Amino acid sequence: MDRWNQSMVPEFVLLGLSHSHNLQRLLFVMFLIIYVLALSGNSTVMFLIVTDRNLHSPMYFFLANLSFVDMWLSSATTPKMIADFLSEPKIISFAGCMSQVFFDHCVGAVEMMLLVVMAYDRYVAICKPLHYFTIMNLKRCTGLVLTSWAIAFVHAMSQLLAVVQLPLCGPLEIDSFFCDIPLIIKLSCTDSHDLDIYMNADCGVVVVTCFILLLISYTYILITVRQSSKAGASKALSTCTAHITVVMIFFVPCIFIYVWPLNITWLDKFLAVFYTLIAPLLNPAIYTLRNKEMKNAMKKLKSHFTNHKGNT
Image (cartoon, rainbow, N blue to C red; front, side, top):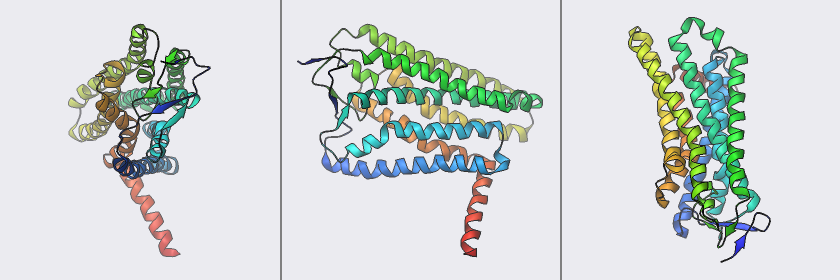
């Protein structure tokens, strides 16, 4: 068995999602369509929020940032996966592998913290409506987004530094469509028990802390909603339902991959595809379909292009 360190590792082999050539061609078409739709959907959300003055509020400021992060999340690993469906063997360099590790954890952590920030925004809007615009001013909103990126950067660097110096033993095959820390640790020549614990604890601090903060925020919101008027309660519940749906779609796969791993290969691959590609696809649809202001903005955009086309 060959032994490698970080200065010697030439490349890794990704085993991908399937060994069947026919299935890989089908997956190429399917995932290419999903990827384009995810980019288009999130780009549309960002465009609507920037161009429609009715959407210039803290909630939509955070939603635009979430859409931006979703575009990065789906782009960190998906283009390589799509290209690999048409190539054999599926090779990735050491630098490319480490880049995937860093960006996947950095962007994933930003998404988690933005979901917490959005929950806090809804908490202030529903529980302290008279002070909402005083508390959620532009300076604070910008600070919350920048803080999310800073914490995510530190988290991703701590994960990267844990594996970049790891001595690896060949064959350097990763049974997935992208490089992820649990799979790289499996290639280690040394006892990886302590590193597994560190990785789970590091990810657990981010995931579990964010999840607990989300539960606290939405618990306070639901308690307040029960005591409010029916009209206000209906609107608040509609908004919160969309937020909670997005939270569950993103957090559940991350928990079972990084915090409480099941170590079932096919399930790990499915969950990885779900949170890196399917979640960024569903998020804009969920927020648009369940939000009256977003639907009105979509209608105005459609009407604008229809009228423009008719005039030409």
